[in-house]
Image (cartoon, rainbow, N blue to C red; front, side, top):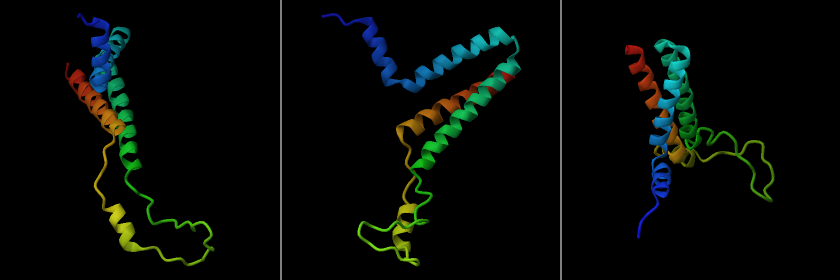
Length: 126
């Protein structure tokens, strides 16, 4: 029984999305260098893309950070609105002190962002 080579490649891409994205970004960087013929401009492009990807990754990390826990207290169904409802500070503190959660999208964007920033630094040394 033989396996199809295309299936192997597709499975590799699915399993290693960040590595595949890194390879595509290097190819795009090479095309950028062919167009501009300037390594500093190519390095600047890589650095800006890397910073944008890092910011997206940080946004995914902060999404799970419970930053706004305890600011607003919504009344439950059937509960009347009280102007000065107290918030349980122990519950809020327990939620805010929970460990940092790195979701799959956060890991992906942070990995690719760090890679592009490092590549931009290496390209600027050339």
